[in-house]
Image 1 (cartoon, rainbow, N blue to C red):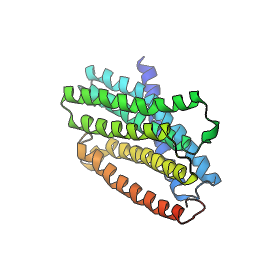
Image 2 (cartoon, rainbow, N blue to C red):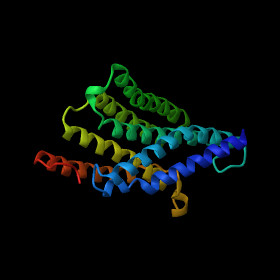
Image 3 (tube, rainbow, N blue to C red):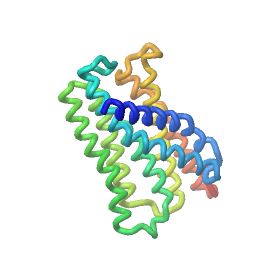
Image 4 (cartoon, one colour):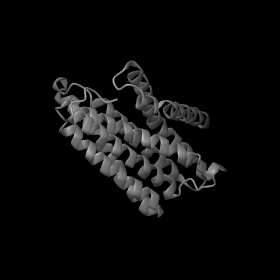
Amino acid sequence: MALLLRIVFGIHIVAGAVALLVFWIPLVTRKGGRTHRAFGWVYVAAAATVAVTGIGSAVRLVVERSGGGPHRGRPWAGVFLVYVGLFAAESALLGVRALGPKARLTRLDRAVDLIPPLLLVAGGLLLAAFGIAEERLLLVLFAALGAAQGIAHFRTFRTPSSSREGQLLAHMGAMGTSCITTLTAFVVVNAPRLGMRRFDPSVWFVPIVVLGLGLTILRRHHAKRLANGAARLE
């Protein structure tokens, strides 16, 4: 079991590194172009892998509670990181599905699309309860953020935009959110090297607030361009 958990954790690390290395490429290349699409799919695959292997990584952290690992006595760290992976993967999924042909979706397709945001909401409620029990403010705050995001994404999936402009903006917002989560996780993991505590709430929310503000400004800029008849997002 220990060997299997180490393998899963290794895959988790590699997938996270890949996501971190490629997430910026679709942001700076021509939207809809070959490079944008190719590296976009690489990022989505990496984000999905991070989310799935995050479960195994959480088990590893919980097991270390009784050992001598760096997270001894902190099983909540594993639970938290699983939710972070779910957050990034769910946002990436919305980013992909936002551009899909809505007319071809069956009732089953639409029902399946609602599962990830519902998981984000349900996971947020559980994480908040866990955070209250463990007296961890960070868990409660991040759970609230994730649940709010899940509700917003649920509404997007339930009533998807019929306009191309709306689809493009939904794609940009969701993929941007996923990238922000990935980058924030990287900052937190390396926080000790910067002289900061890894699970200090400020380490998590400063990048989220700053990058989130940047994403909001970028979306508004492209919304104006699309409203003025721009053919595509650049």
